[in-house]
Image (cartoon, rainbow, N blue to C red):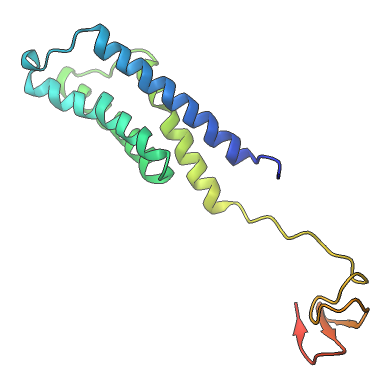
Length: 157
């Protein structure tokens, strides 16, 4: 088993945090006694962004980190913009950002996966096996960074 990478650890922090965030949002929904018949159309728009869009993004991020992270962060930014349009001010406190933070972590994992070079294969001793013909002989010659086997007339990097 290989040691976990930083991306692997970041991914699991985001996953555990997303479970906690969705759990807290569900507790608010149940604890507040949500009544859909008393909700205004303007409130429905806000609810579709936060918590619905944000939660959907975190669920999708377990499979598609880029899409889910972008949906989570995008829903939070759209919610802030919508609240600013309605009331002329942004929501106060760090609660909204804290609940949506796993989306940013998922985006970080997605970005790191695409911008981190793959690990190089383990090096083998030249005297163990020929890399080209796989015999247990030292039949290789090196020239300009390439390896040539005496048994086969191929060059390999």
